[in-house]
Image (tube, rainbow, N blue to C red; front, side, top):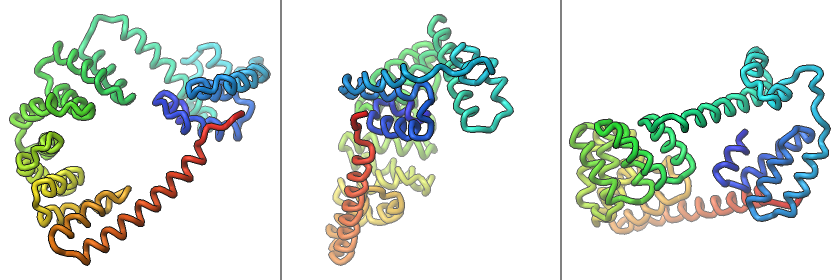
Length: 303
């Protein structure tokens, strides 16, 4: 099931690794070879795809004399399948229930697409595009939703966030500012508006908003990271230090340690800067080694 998600997101190496892991556990399961073939096709290995497709065609048909969940699925008896699997707490039952629910959802989406345009329809499409990281398409759907519900603050916020994700900061900023005017106490909106200003290289304007966000919600680590960046950009490394230290536990790639090293160095604290730089280099080495191992594990190899 995870492999299917990765394939939809065009993460071919990860999908390939997971499909192969599934095949090791259930080599006779219908559909797996066909999905591996799809990964091969979409990653430019059509010759390998043919081999996997042939393996799929050579699998024996399931014995449907005794009703099985797979047979019900093949016959598109999705409601009956859900009833049959309801009391079974096995991996197989959960798998076929998930597949059945997915097919019913697709039927619902198809029906929804046949109905007149609605706010809900555009929102749904926008969320699908966002999940696929197609932010320009998502933003257009949110715009279309706003035409039908222009006063909906949640849609306005989702549009602004989507524009920010697509790096259209100039378009996102006035939307965030308008929302913040209506909800000045919101830590989240202070953070989003402040970080968007920072993305536009307007650090001095960003600092008061990001400070307000961290004061209202000290656990908002993203706001602390953004505030530290703003202080560094504004030439105030001493003010950046406490926020970088507060966010260090979330540092996955060493970048916060590097920023803290820079802040210490600019603040004349050479010893602390050296310690942070050494920790940054350790984390970078570990991340590079882990990445190399992961890359070998998910390499797309011949059948």
